[in-house]
Every structure is written in structure tokens, then in C-alpha cells.
Length: 282
Ligand code: PAF
Image 1 (tube, rainbow, N blue to C red):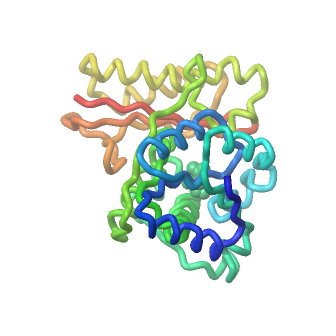
Image 2 (tube, rainbow, N blue to C red):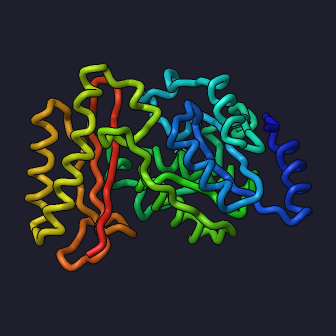
């Protein structure tokens, strides 16, 4: 695995790759890699000749009261895992490399359509930070395909929309949610759970599945269903940020006759905010 810290040297290497006709798959990450990230890399490898992974903990997508300073940085472990997974190129820039003019003056990419709802409502500016850095990374790497986990459903929807709106010439490949044995979606933030919280954290997934079954069985009183689901989660001691039944492509509240529905939930633990989602077609 070759490691690059600078845009210029990565670009030079990738130009050579491109000139030989090989395809480039890209997996952007913030490090602290777990099995779900490795799965993204495996999927990129199935679709492309060469895999580039980036590790950059993007301060622009954290608000001031969030965990940017304590976000786990585990470079040595991450590099070992990437080598095992046959990652070809690792891009690990520092903040000056990505934001040479400073973050305040950085040109932003804003997707007004879906940035302010769901996670965006409780994390103002978060998705603007995500779409801005992902647009930059796409311009730096210029991959043929990029892989994103469905676990971050809203992020995936926004990135698809950004790619469409800005005519970025690449294909987005969605990767299934990778789960622990009890159904908890894998996340770097699961490391923040106390042992006691960990025993109950799968409730979010359980209740999402319960609500999906209710819809499959014919329920269409979505507002009442969201309320019941919220109560079920809160009975286990976690505070719910949102539990929403949405149209899958635009994340607007689902209508009774929608055929593609996604249920999304977010709940607070003592030190983390966990998210998950499930989809269904009617
Ligand atoms: O999903 C993530 O880890 C981040 O939001 C991403 C896409 C790497 C952008 O910083």
C-alpha cells in the first residue's frame, strides 16, 4: 500500500494509473476503521482495478460542541487493516492540505434539498461540511466509482444529489449496513457506549424493524407509528432525536401511497448519538 499526504503526489500517481486504462474505486473515511469500512473496500475492489481510501477527520462537518477533538484517531491500526484488505493507495492529508485557505474562507458545496432535516436539524452545518469535503475529495481522486454505506442514509442521498446536480462524472455505489450480531449498526461511535448501554443499543434497530413490519402489514398512520416507536425506544432509557418515516429518494415525510419508504432513527446515549435506518418497497 502506498501512502500519500499531498494532493499533488496522489494526483500524479493516479494519472499514471488512469493512463493505463485501469479503473479507480474510492472509499472516503474518517479512520477508526471497523469491519463495515473493510466491506466498503471489498465492494470497491469488486467494481474497480485499484482502490483508494482516504482518512481525514473533517473538522468542517463537526459543530463546536461535537466530538472532533476526541474522535478516535487510530492510524497504526487503520494502516494494518488497510494492508490486510489490499487497499492500494491511502490518502491521509492534514488540514492545511485540504483547507489551504483556511476553513472560514473555504468555498462550500450546499445541497439545500435535504441538509436541514433529520440529522441536519440537530447538527446544523454538518452536511454542508460533508458535501464540501466529499466534493473536494472527488476532485482530488477523480475516481470512476465511490462507495458509501447505506447506514448514513441521509449522507448517501445528499451525495447522490450533489453528484447529479454538479454533473460529477462518477458512479456512487451504496453498500449494505454492516451489523453486529444483535443488529446494532457498526459505527466508529459505538466505541463511546458504556457496557450497560451496549447491551441495549440494538433497540434502535429492533424498533425500526418492528415499525417496518407494521407498515408491511398495512398501517399507514405514520405519525402515530413514529410516536409509538419513539416511546418504545425511550422505554429503554435512550432519548430519541428523531424517528421518521420518509420517502426514500427525497427524505420528505412519507405519503400513504408511497412505494419506496425508508424509516430513519437517531437516539442519544450518554456520549454518542447513534443512527440507523431500514427501507421497504410496497
Ligand atoms: O461518512 C464519513 O465517514 C464522512 O462523513 C465522510 C464521507 C468520510 C466525509 O468526511
